[in-house]
Image 1: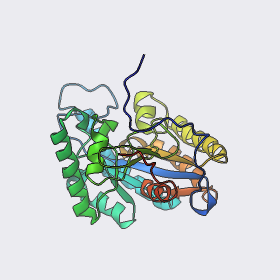
Image 2 (image 1 turned 90 degrees about the vertical axis):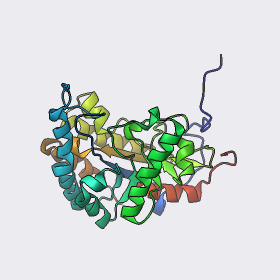
Image 3 (image 1 turned 120 degrees about the horizontal axis):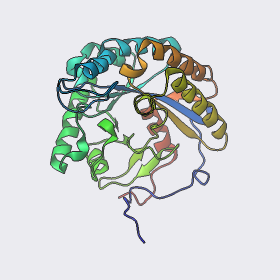
Image 4 (image 1 turned 180 degrees about the vertical axis):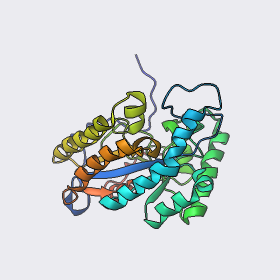
Length: 297
């Protein structure tokens, strides 16, 4: 029996790969993936705090909007307090809706990566031309605002069509966060050359943890700490990447923020032993030390 496959990458056990180091000889790279999202009112997709009623679903829309109005600003304070950079995964709609917030992340030098137009839609349901247009529109907004094109992409809802990696590489993207299958970066094959899959968490991620599994604030913080401590030990054997996926409308709530501070402070206290960085910097380092294999076309 032959199962359907994708031919984007080959199987390779993590224990049998090329050795390399992160800067300073460190073995564990850690980055914060901060999702800044804007949603349509009265239509489209959106995470739910509680089961929504008929549209307009004011309860859940307002809960999500709290993230942009309050939670994201409190998280900026927390990042500054702990001297942590961030990879900001930005819906392009954020530049029109909350330009002050985007300007603050620009001012602190955070990396801005593409995250579609809005999380009210999925690109996976579009035909290739429409998906190409979505990527181009979102990319143009970020490029105009930041003065440089984004190099990384996370699809809204991590939703891909069969040609998304090809379209991203065609549009000039260098890495994707969609493929959450490894603790090291993995080169992927596309019709337009190599695209690097950088680890992005589905477990250490407040959407599946808090919204789906209903984990408590303390439990989510403990998850971050335990994941970090275990990966720090594992990284003695091979270099690893740990991402932390956060949404301000979830962890920006005051009681969750207090526990998140505890978890991020635990990581920051180890900054001499790890590489606290951004996803883009992970790409730069890995691409220089581990070039894509010859069969990437």
